[in-house]
Image 1: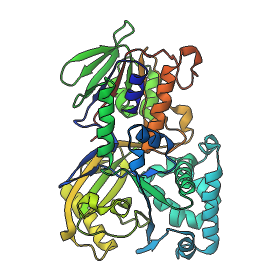
Image 2: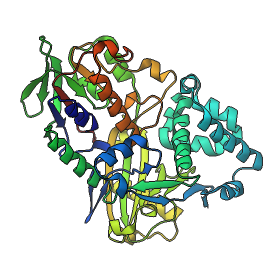
Image 3: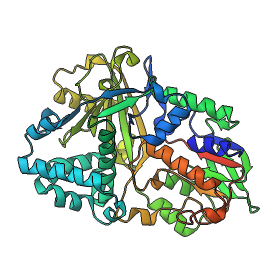
Length: 448
């Protein structure tokens, strides 16, 4: 949506095809009973300069509510607060030397700027070197497994560096406090305002219009075949779906391009949204190291967002990250419900199933590209070998972690590149740069 807006502001005629019946993709909103809120958990950090600039343009930045949040840690069947330095020093599972090394790891990572070098070393080797074996096994490995599963063995140190760098920047911007923000109404408000801006700029937005094929016409045009059987022709096309989906959609790509697109490994997500009568804890995020817990973390959105936004109730997310090809995407809602709620009962003795007002599951196969060893050197190019066809998605976030700010930043930089005359555009990773004329931004349904 950001890219479509910027291209239109450059004077181009833009059509945006969205496979889903709603805008926003991973940032979309849905209904939880009578409550409308984000399908997945999102926060805005004070250091999110690109997102905040877009919100300012939409007249929303001044509406952001900033809140100092708390962090919990569930380990050894105990829930601990890890919200300040004193609580960190009192954290029982780690000894004093372990804590010094862990703090040193985080501080050192926050100061590193050469992220390319970190792509050449595994995340476990790097964390073991800096934090020590005990902290690696007690803290880092459970967190890595929760986010990446067995794919943590393939991840480079750049993966954890990007996460640490973002959160450390947030604490600097928040005067050493964990300050998170949200727009009242959530991303439903943001998307409504952004959608209205697209319409004002003359962008044609087609909802419920997934593409099933993209190819060259042979005369410097791009033909797009839609699921409804219609085809349309454009001067330029930008595909923003996941890399493997783009590989399946496009005809005429080179073998090397297809190999690179299909070579990107993703983590998908099962994300449960719970609307509860009562909150679980005062922590916005509770990190979990226990292997028996079926979800990655507990995200208590109502520890950040005023509960009036949820009708006086509490909103909790229970994410589980799994490989994109995992058979767990086929689990029934009843099975997921029983497994997740049983774990909540063990973690929080005061939790009662009668507190559950709404239970919904979002299943998305392609969410997080895994930063593997030498990742940036194997990226698929943005501008393809097919004149006028471009593929731009989250795999091109090479020195950050997936979030809305990074996505907006990617779109802003891409729009600037498309606006530049070919002679002024760097050729890597944009081989065959052309001046963009009329453009098409395509988005396919991301849900499984």
